[in-house]
Amino acid sequence: LCSLAGLRLEIPAFAKVVGILMQRDAPVVQLRLVLNLVLTRGSNPIPLVPPAASPDEIRASFDGPGAGDSDDDGDRDRESQPPAPQLLASGCRRFPELNGTFLLDPEHTSYGRPTY
Image (cartoon, rainbow, N blue to C red; front, side):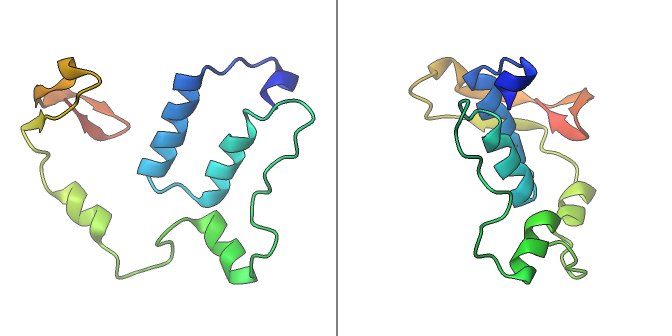
């Protein structure tokens, strides 16, 4: 799909998009769609829903995890609490410069989420 559109997608950018979708519990259909972006010309696309999926599974694929659950207040509870003033990262061997304390930047957010 990217080659047909003339879009060049580097591996780190692709991995970032996939990571963000997974982190935010995006519907399975969105993740499968992004996986199709990097297929080579002539490859068979990944179907948006598994071929043997039941109607309920298909609906859940488009709605995302927890959609329609009226008693799930997990996101609201997290959003009502102030973010931690600092984060401590440790144990990163590949990029040791990432180890350390990261302070909250109250003036900037990333799509409404705190940044450090």
